[in-house]
Image (cartoon, rainbow, N blue to C red; front, side, top):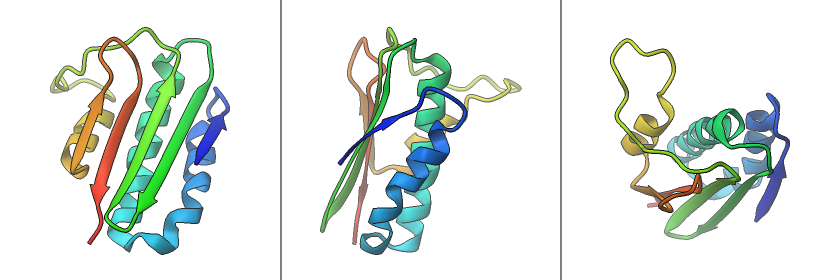
Length: 117
């Protein structure tokens, strides 16, 4: 499923609401992790993603949940969080909670996957 999100402070809430259709297919831990990670990535897309659209793509099958957040930014370096720095928790959270994640080089297209038991 694909969702076009507003490029404003409401985008993370709209993205979380879009995930509601997956609540029954995910256990509570996976659903909570998915909501948190999508919120973080969408927040980054709104904050750093340029002027164009923000898109959320989600898919689930019996073994895996996958989410992708795509914006029109010029890309970024997924550097480590600097101690004492305000913010910057999005990608470390993705790294910690997702089973797999990545970016498409030179873009701001970020994806993650959660294995479902």
